[in-house]
Length: 177
Image (cartoon, rainbow, N blue to C red; front, top):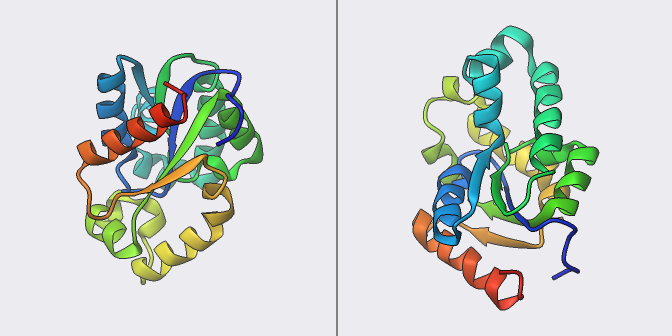
């Protein structure tokens, strides 16, 4: 573990469909903290789901919105923050999040991601002829960013509650809670 960051947030990062939002809600309730989800904020502000933002305005537009929302939520205190899967690819966003609290990467195998992701039309980055290959490619590309988390929790064979409990145990053991 690293030195305590300036702020005391718990930030969940990781690939799509790894459970960041559901785990984050549970963890926030357990710890009596507020919960915020960057994707939900973007959808509320734009008045449409992310898949339509991607379709109508493109990924660069979405990533710009995402970086602004990350900058906002990183200034919070005592929060559990769930970030979109690609949020940490932006170096400034990653820096702000690291300064904001502990980064916890929740992971899953490509097979688990595919099973949890729903239809490809719900996940713009999976609207390709070969979604499993795209998942593997994106995971490989993002690995250097995800590996900067303070710790990682695989979610494949665990319930959301089990993952939240495991995160709480690690943070407690490290003196963060």
